[in-house]
Structure formats: C-alpha cells, structure tokens
Length: 326
Image 1 (cartoon, rainbow, N blue to C red):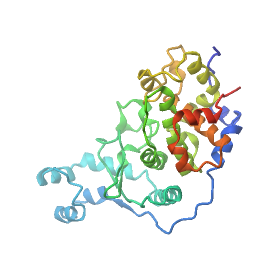
Image 2 (image 1 turned 30 degrees about the vertical axis):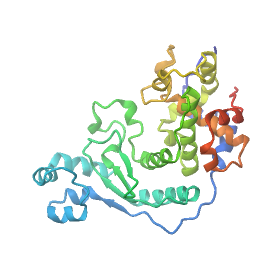
Image 3 (image 1 turned 180 degrees about the vertical axis):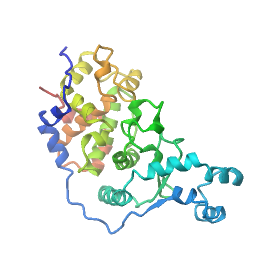
Image 4 (image 1 turned 90 degrees about the vertical axis):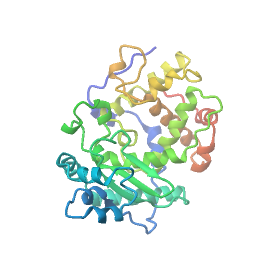
C-alpha cells in the first residue's frame, strides 16, 4: 500500500489538484434571492444577567427558559459573577450583525431547496460551559433555534482548559453558522439503513456534507466539516491512499460497527492502526463520503437535491464512479 503523505505546510492545500471537487462545489453557487425574512437575534443571557431587570419580568418574557429550576436557584445563578463573566467574554467575540446577515442568507438557501421550512426565531444564550458539547439545538415544534455562545470563545481559550483540543477545533465564532447549517442538514437526511455497512455510513455523512455545500457555498470546506486548514490539507493530499486502505482491507462493504468509531466519530485522529494515525485527520470517513457524493454530482449534476437524498448508498456509490487517482 502507498505511504500516507505528510503536509509540511498548510499552504500546500491551495496547490493540490482539486479540479473535480471544484466543479461539485461551484454547482451550488446559484443566485438565491433573500425571501424577505430577516433573522433577528435575541440575546437571552444579556437580560438574564442584567440584575436591573426584575426576575418576574424576565420570566414573563421567556417562560420556557427556566425549566425546572426554582426561583431561588434562578436568582442565585443570575447573580453569579463567574457565570456572568463567561457570558460577557463569549458575547464580546461575536459580531451579532454579521451573524444575523449570515443566518438570513443561510435560511434563504435552505428554503430555496426545502420551501416548507420556516425561518426560526434565533436565541443566543450562555450555558456557562455546561452545554458546549451540543451548542446548537433546534426545537422543531416551537421553531426556535438556540446557540450557546460559551461554546464559541475560540481555540485555546482559558475557559476551555482541560477540554480535549480536537473538540476546540470548531469552537470559534466562525464555526457558528456551519454548525447551525449542520443541525438542519441532519434534519433533512433520512437515516434508513436496511443492513448497515460502512458504505452506508460514508454516504449518509456524505449526504449531510452535500447539504453543507448547498447551504454554505461561500464558506471554506474546513469550516463545513469542522477541520483546521492543515487537517483538510492532509485529507485532500491522502484521499487516494485513504481509499486504497479502505479497499485493500475490505472495509467499504464491511458491517463491522467498530468502523464508525474509527473513522466517523469525533476524536483526535482517525484509526488506521498504522504509524500514521497521530498525523491523520479525524473523522476521515465523513470526508470520504463527502467526496463520493461530490463525484456523484459531477456525474449527474442535474439530480434534484431532494431526489438525491432519497437514493440508497449503493446507488450513489455505483453511479459516482468514485475511484480517486493521483
């Protein structure tokens, strides 16, 4: 098997041959006009930590925010200076006007492909680091989108001390919109595996990433997938070798459930069980599935997105003619 390549400089990323991928990306750069709905962002924590605002007034305005917390504990948390500082540090890093514009554009694109979706109400809040593993969540029934600003304070932020560095890769302000897009992409991709094989996992995640391309055509690939530029560069440089490894080790159609943990789930790197592991990009199966789906659209660019999402993984793989070459 060929040796995996090291990237000596992330600038190599911009000189690698990516012609087939470029076509798949550009096809989504269609002119989508705003639908007239403008996202307005509500900063819940700004009011929560404002002790000049009576608790009763806050509760009346956001009756669903308190949950099962007692009024006494609620008041204590409002007065917690450490929590308030985390919120202030986090919100100071976010350009809310820019975020509102980007979310408006995002939902214009989502509605272009899925007209039935309603533009949600958007709420920023701080969980004081308690909810940073799942910082974006959408309440479908109430059509409310919540974004935990304490999860986007930037890599190596002092508040993240002790948190694995691979989690921090996508905890920057520029990762907010891609993570919002990801939540909605996952909402639209059906997960119906008759008999789950590795190729099913690859294509399932590739479909999600295809929606990332459609929803975020102006965003860089590393932001769509939650990589650093260096990690994306390694994946691009080694695409041929990664696929050769999958094929030579009979992994593509394997039903070994451990493959998801090795190549799909979050982690510091992918697990090839070779000396290259520590240098590899994490979640490499998602990257490969993405390239399979991009190759499918190179072959069949006229396929309606909603029809594509209903295709089974075997059909997408066969019709993609995916065979990466040097």
